[in-house]
Image (cartoon, rainbow, N blue to C red):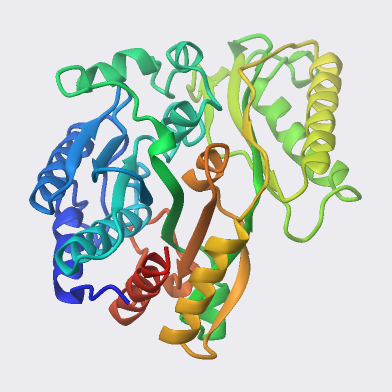
Length: 398
């Protein structure tokens, strides 16, 4: 095993948490392209340089710490949700930094590090790695906007003075990403490590229904073209119509709603909402899309409303590379003998995009109470260090 320094690893992880600290528990507020995100990436670049790596920002803010010649790439992302946990993504970046640094100190195998930008999807779906991998064209990405209307091309201008060219992926032999589970499986079972077998696919789009804004006191109920009532009917109908298509592991979410004009005495005339669904089978994702579109069109027609859709974003399900996965499994059995499992990932990760370019694998550590995307997100330090050691074992086998 590469002789990693657990104390140094934890100190770096806690320092990164201090950048954009929410002041609530261990939570962070570090969405992509915000001041806190940029500050964190500049700090990470300094740590990469101090570790003997060459820091390199690409045109969209992805940060690489490069070693000379071919190398194994490790990392994750350092941006957060608007109300984010301190470990989501950050754990994988700092663990990769420690393994790369320790390997250089010990004369071990060459390891490069990456922190992808906007994994959390302020502008798209795993935006930074999607662009780097070719899953999303840069000119198309530049037209995407966040919920506040800011375009991606405007946001990434924050890195204009730091950005170089895109890094050639052919210099890397594979990619390994360490992450918190973001679910309850490991925490409930008491197991310390999860070796990922595959990652679910995802679809994400915005739907807009537009009726008629009107007076809330004088407009009879039977004459209303109420956008919120349309959304409510859509949500109820979708839950029913998915019943014979989905499995217990399929999930779908309406996570963001913008109601216009959003005033208590006005019948809302327009609603735009996000619709996201995830599953391990591409065919099922496609069938769900058709149900979503058919249901939206039916409800809009019944209520005399217009209907429009934003861009469809998504990624296909991905299986992990057998060789890299075997290396992680061997490390897991060494570090957490009999206390680990193989498991799928219900969350989306940058590894999905990177799989288009090279072999990929992933490693999970438990999330306390299964909580993530929340200020309460946490993992026991003993489990964090165990994951780091598994990562180091796997890297030493390359």
